Amino acid sequence: MKELEEFIASGILELYVLGLSNAADDAEVKKMLSLYPKQIGQEINEICNVHEGIALANSIEPDPIIRPFLLAKIDYMDRMMAGEVPAEPAELTTASKISDYNQWLNRADMVLPVDAGDVFAKLIGVTDKMITAIVWIREMAPQEVHDDEFERFLIVEGTCDIGVGESIYSLAKGDYFQIPLHESHTVTVTSIVPCKVVLQRVAA
Image (cartoon, rainbow, N blue to C red; front, top):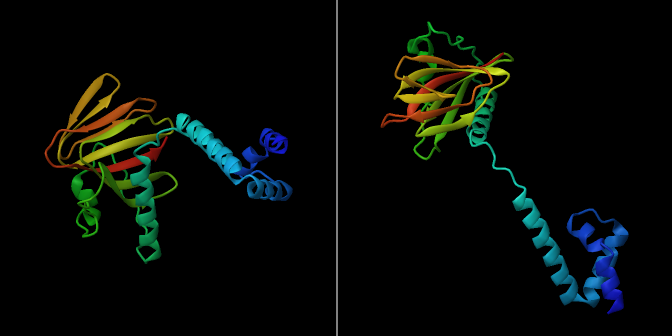
């Protein structure tokens, strides 16, 4: 049993579990596993449980807005590969109108799927300077801060409150709003229907 105790104390099993062991270590693990299957198997399980606990304790909740925009980017790339011609939608300003974006808003594929999550996006333009998307928000968009890009909204359907710092701005169809840099902000839908917006992120 001294051989077993010394082997467990050597740290080779930790390296093995983490995928950091070399060929000689792997051979030693297999040898000891054949000699002491119960003890070595139990030790490997305990090491796995310890590392899983450490990983869970230090895990970071991903930004919930990342997933819908990642899926939108994949969808956009698929559309381009299928032959869609890249477009450059007009930059959003205080003078922008919903009709400026009708060529995308009226497309059959620019719809909110029934099974979409709280935020769903379809990219309609991507350049080095800005991205433009049609975005649907069912209930709310989580708190964000932008330090290197301006986020702009043009409300197409529904209503929402945009909270910036201590201020609340109530927006309805046709309203334009730009989020200031370095300001924490949230979006809360106030209509029964999802809030549909043309959204732009423009490099500062």
